[in-house]
Length: 598
Image 1 (cartoon, rainbow, N blue to C red):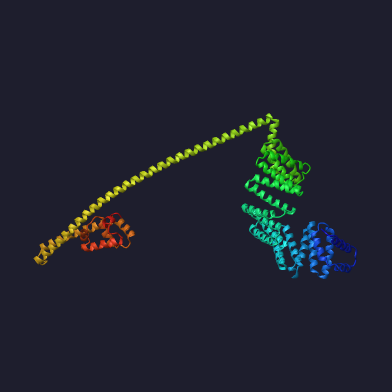
Image 2: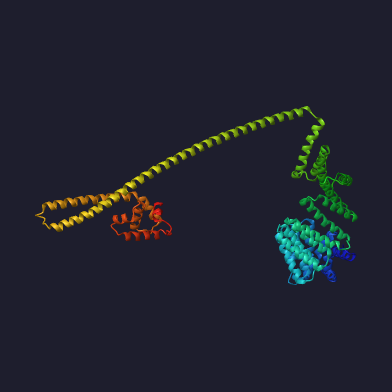
């Protein structure tokens, strides 16, 4: 509020600015006052009380300040004009003059209270316009200016930290909001002011509430209450205390459905507010309490409280809390199934919303829906018209027909699906049967081929045995032939009979050799697949070792293999040892059985 002395200053300068023609006289008058800065600061604090005179005085101060280059008065006068235009709704001018105040800050005022408040006012203007980024920039700059001129704990630092936290909260950057609320808490601890300390804890609780961490929110709200409880409970403290209680009750209702506890809190809140004559906010607490009582079905107490609130709103239907009261009334009549009363309240609610905002269709949707629903029930109950019942019956029959059609359609679909499943199952069974038959035939063919192959192998084995016998005979024959040639010692000319016999024997030997060659060719053909597998499994085996393995697979003995390959028995045994080593067989493994299993 303006003091008498300050009012005299303001009106005097306004009067002088109006009637004096000499700017010099006005300047001398202002220069005689040592309290120009003080008066302008008070004008800022009480601008709403006399905006016109404050505006005139600020303009006159501004003229003199510009002439004298008095930066402090220049900043304050521009701040007054910026605030004046802000209150008047002329935003462009408000930005212009507040910006001039900010831009006038020189090096001296970058570490002064005047510079701090000029920067803060500029930040508040951007915050009001919801330009949160610029608002944050200037609030932080104001914080730096404040820290430049004092490091003492201050309520202004506490408030500015809180403003920064609120801006981060508006940006939904709850992490930074919590950070600055915590800094504000530390400032409040240094100030040793329990209301500010409680406010800081309350703000942190709200930050956690915004993050959805309701347990921590309740914890910090509880801490805020504790600090106020330890005071003598002044009016300000008591009212702030019940505000914190309301925050707690809101969490109880919205997130935990603890209606009984919330109703007791709101009862206490209403009592304290009535004690300090805050009737309107007390009624709001009554409405919240009524909502909780309805939720816990406490009919007796809710009826008493409801009548009390109704009495209050008889001639106060323009009260902003009346809408909430109507919403609770709708809930009461809905829970009691009082359709007639619900209809009446719905109509009243619609009328209230239309009066509040005719174009607010979205706000009316719920009330209109309730109105239509309960109007229909009431209309049927009151009038009981046969026509309406006939329409209902017809609609019911149509619905039944549609339902029957739908059921039939679903049954047909189910039947078709079942037939398709059965058909698919049969086809699958047929396919499996065919596959089994093919597998069976394949196995039979494989068995026959295997038996045939075994017979061929046996036959070839016998042929090879015979071949070995023939080879022995050939050796004997050659020895005999040699013996004859040595014994007879006849010339080619004189010994025609001997030559003929020799020629005949040689031809016979050629036939035997051709037979041996054919047998070896057959053996190579039969063992081609075995030889290929052997090469893939044991690539280190030589061609000679693979041939010996083939003979082993055909049940040839070491002696027989030695005769066929014209090698010694020892060399065949050494070859077998090399084969075992390359196949990495353990001593207990039988080489013949292993080769036959490949």
